[in-house]
Image (cartoon, rainbow, N blue to C red):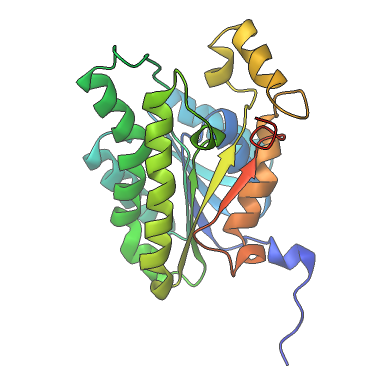
Length: 258
């Protein structure tokens, strides 16, 4: 009879290798640190080399193992280079967190082809082509899991955020398609939909917008980036071994309150 797993063992990621895009700040950095604390070796990517170096320093200062790979995820060649660098460093890929995003905001009537393409390339296309580039390594893993970070905005009207929410809604559908097609290969694919989180992306909108976003939640506040670590680790770990094609909403009670 198989032993009943302990709670600790279900969340133990020792021996696994994780790529986290947009892993140098906000939710991405918090999740990268959480993965490292759980035992994973982590690869953080960002466009800026100095940001990668700072993230690696923060992770290793806590005793984790990490490398940084500068990468513009809107460029397909960079995605292949990210996979190659990960395999060169660690020889395997078990977990992918598609977290990097941009939040271009233009009202309907002013959206340009360039803005649309840039948003789609980063928020949706990159996730697909990173997984495709890493697919042979994921297939070889006995514990492969992909986490696509979407947004609670996909369950709202997306007013003033059509560029962003359309791309994230596409990523949610892509999550389902990936899950359906890759389940037979032993690869789980899920999504995390954060509500308003206290990140640079939110703060850059100004204090009034940040306060309004906090007020939109039932809990009346922004989340700390670290509050996304638990949901992310659940979906990436053996604790969610029978979960695929799902979305975990961590929004402080935004959607049901709307």
